[in-house]
Length: 135
Image (cartoon, rainbow, N blue to C red; front, side):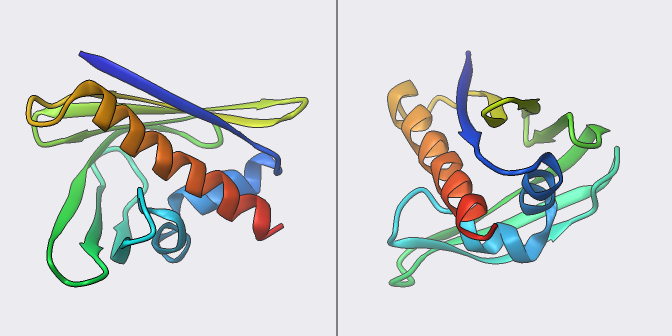
């Protein structure tokens, strides 16, 4: 099943795109809650390029690599990627009130749809706050 989350970022598309695709920025916003953080990130932003973000609990109790391969890139418009046997699509729509960032991803069977939606939405909300605070 596909899940979609979205937010509007009140910033120029160039800034939104850069913050979404630059490892140093990703490490600042990529967490669903304050007790987690991203300790490393790499991005090879091209079709066939790899990405990875190391996500860890701040207390050291858990961690995992969110990694995959980009399948389609349209600068300032679209990022598609696969991670494991799942896929995701990130759309950037520049409008009058800011940039709508919409992420649609394949759910997984371990966690409830509501928990997955809430986690990805929390990360996207952190992203918007980070970008708006760094203008």
